[in-house]
Picture 1 (cartoon, helix red, strand yellow):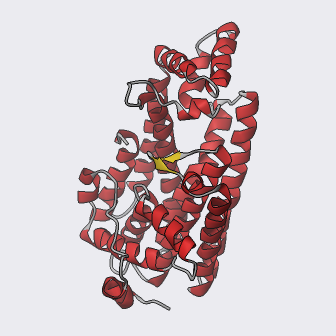
Picture 2 (cartoon, one colour; picture 1 turned 90 degrees about the vertical axis):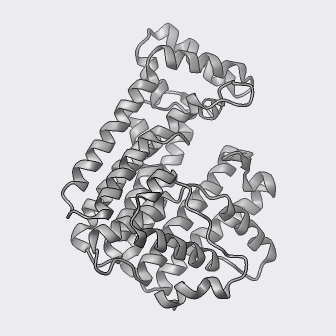
Picture 3 (cartoon, helix red, strand yellow; picture 1 turned 135 degrees about the vertical axis):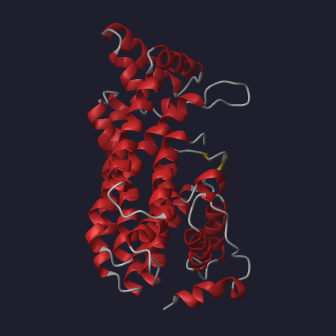
Length: 351
């Protein structure tokens, strides 16, 4: 079993596995305690090292995936939670292994989602299914999911089984509900909140819970979960707002959610502002956008005209307020302030 001392020296013994910098906003990253920055660097080495296999193809796929990983929000949540919960001895083997398991589950869900959605791009780069094949993408996702549970058993973190299995079940159910609603196009606010809670917020909540439990602060696990869940809700709403803000090189809206017939909060609110006749016309544009992207602009303009983005932002801010209210009850520390900053970043970020 790898201990913390070995994690610190892995970089010297592992060729080509240098840490990938954390991609959250530099302003937010710079506000993190030095202990968290150091833990993130050690984690990247530990994480990448734990994934390599006897298959050169699988190694190539793993390297491709993790060179292009996103903001590391879930590892950040684990380490900030651990430090805020147990400042004297926050990180141990279970913290690193639990963080790796969380990140593997998250990444597996993304790889599988791209197959389900038939997406060719992920953050501007080719998805795994586009770079290779859907079969390879599914197998890579399966490998990541299985590897997560191997880590849990290897480090004898049997009490983490329920923490890890719950998000997997929730994400699967959330994806099925979203697929169902993309066919009938009748998503309500209540259903939308349930979808994003299952698909995004539950795993971020689990990340915070892992941080508390791995550091021995079991009494704070539920509070930390709720903090993470609220941050996750705000984070996903902000992502859904981006879909109406982002434009391509020609200045036209990307509208990926619209193309996939996903009815998210900005559009749900806008539709509630008009009569049934107008609703039907806009929903027809949503359906047609999957074959003709010219309809995306119509939907986007409709959302803007009916204050969909303003409303969605106000809802995201309420989730941040809930998270900050829970964080306020923690003991004062640098990590506590960083959690507050992270919660605010969920709605202020521009990427």
